[in-house]
Length: 219
Image (cartoon, rainbow, N blue to C red):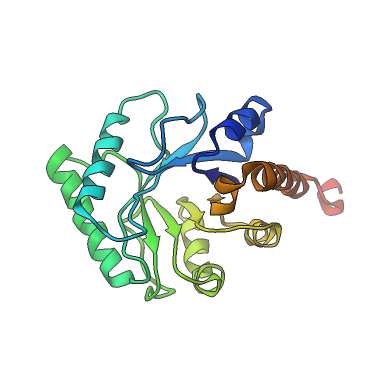
């Protein structure tokens, strides 16, 4: 499991140089985050739509992604524009964006992540998405309601990302679920020295503990 962070450029580069790229990645927001991803570090493109769905934001997202289609380090996935707290509108927006890509490029050039929002059924068939980004407004929705969807996506080999996860207790909860590939949280970007450095060290400890053989493995 990895922690993805926006900004915190100096700290991210320090951690990358120290070999923490096994638990650390970056994400970018079109028009807001400079292109400061360390060479070779895994990253994804967020959509910048948290404050509202705007045509300009979609245009910026398409431009940024198309600029990086043929680079040595393209985004691992892009987060398709969503509508906060509204799954029905998010689904329509996803399909519209998918069609825009098809009309503009003749295909879907990137791995596309759909954002899960309130209103989604726990048995929803997410056949159309390459990855899922767990959004929503509450921890109850993220960590309880969406767990069956995360487990199913994991079984299907899709990348599972959870947004706005801050603090060791929640990190361990995600790690124990066993189906989450990555997460992010605003606290790591705003206070990287106080929050990001301890978080990646803690995450590495959790990953190492999970990889240790048990007594039964040794028999």
